[in-house]
Amino acid sequence: MAKRCDVCGKGPQTGVQYTFLRSHFNPHGKRRWLPNLQPFKAVVGKTVKRLKVCTSCIKAGKVQRAV
Image (tube, rainbow, N blue to C red; front, side, top):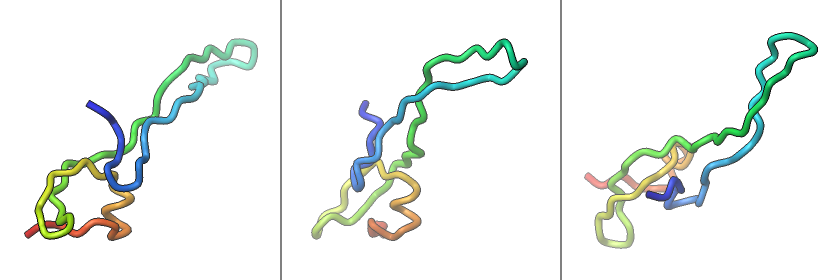
């Protein structure tokens, strides 16, 4: 199951997570930040399709909700 927005293509980002416990001991590890995807029934053309859409696309009005 792909964790990617069907509208804008936003996907997971990778990076390093630091935990600042003490100045001489900073353990870190790799981690992923996942987009906030929601199942969404949208009107595509004249048909209704189920999409995985990120919340920023929903808020921006880039997709039209099916009634």
